[in-house]
Image 1 (tube, rainbow, N blue to C red):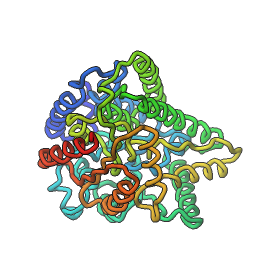
Image 2 (tube, one colour; image 1 turned 135 degrees about the vertical axis):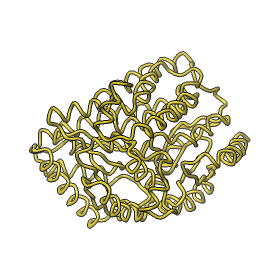
Image 3 (tube, helix red, strand yellow; image 1 turned 90 degrees about the vertical axis):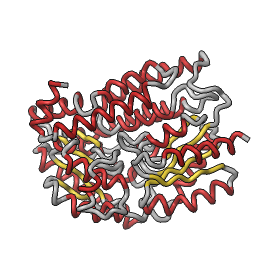
Length: 425
C-alpha cells in the first residue's frame, strides 16, 4: 500500500478520498466474492487483481509510460483494442461503476443522467481513479445521446479527450462512417505514440485480442454444463478484468481456469446443485464495482450462467479476421467485426433478441433478467419489446431498472426471489 501511495500522489489522486473508496471496495469484494463457497482455485487470480485494482496494474502502466509507451483509456467496447495494440499502446478501461461524487457530477450533467455517465464524471472530479489520471488519451464514443452531450462537458475537466462518432444504423452508410472513424482513430494513435501502424503490427494486435476473446468464449461454453462449475459473480469479475488487465496475462489466467473447470465438470464439482434455476443476465454493462444485482440473484437461490451485455458476450462473441495483406483490408475486418455488436443504440436491433434466445437455448436457461440503469434510454426502450418477445417465446423474463445506490436492495431482492419462484414451477 505504501509503495502505491507515492505513485497515487504523483498522479494527483486525492489520497484521503481514495483511501475511503478502497476501504469500501475491499470490504464489498470480500463480502460478495471471497465468501462464496466451493470457488475454483483459478478465481484467486481475480482476487489478486481486484485486491490491487488501483495498485499493481497502475504501477505497470506508469512503468510502461517511462519506457515510452502510451496509455489509452476508454469506456466502451466499440473502441478497438486491436488498433491500440498495433500502435504499441496499452488499452485500459476507465472507472465508471460506483456512486462517487454525484453531487459534483451534477454540476456538469443533469441529475436524470444514467449512473454510468455520472460515475465517470464523479471519479474524475473526486480524483480517485488512477486509471483516468494515468491516461495519455481518453477515447469517448457517441453511442447514445447521453454520452454525446456528456463528452462536451467532460472535455472541460479532462483535456486529453478524443471523441469518436459511431453509426446507429447498420447500413452501407453506417459502415462507411465506422470505417472513417476507425481510420481517423488509427491516425490519432500514430500521432500520439509516434509509432507507425503496419499490417504486421495490426495483425499482431488482432491476434492478441482474439486470444482474449477465445479464452472467454471457452469459459462461457463450460457454463452450459448441467450444473454450474463457477458462479456468475466470478464470471462478472473476469469480464470486468478483461478491460484493464495485461491481455496476455489475462488470457493465460482464463485458460488455466478453464482447464480447472473442465476437471471440475468431470468430477461433478459444482458451485450450485443441478436443480438451481439458471438465469441469463441481459442489458447494460456492469463496470467495477457494480456487483449489486448479480449478488442479489445468486444469494436468492439462482445461478447466472450467461451475460448478454458489454461486460459479457457482447464484448467477446465475435472475432476479428486476421486475413488481409494490407492495413486497409485489416481495418475493413475490424469494421466488420465491430459492426456486428448488437448494442441497443442500433435501430433496428433484431440481432440482439436472437442472440438472447440462442443463449437461453445454448445454456439451458430457465429465464432472463433484463438489467437497465435508470435513465439509460436505449436499454430501457428495448427492454419493453425484448420482454414481450421473450415471454411470447415461452421464456420467463424479469426487467429490473436500478442505479448504483444500495437503497433499493430490499425491493430488488423481493422481486428477484418472486421471479426465481416463478421459474422453479
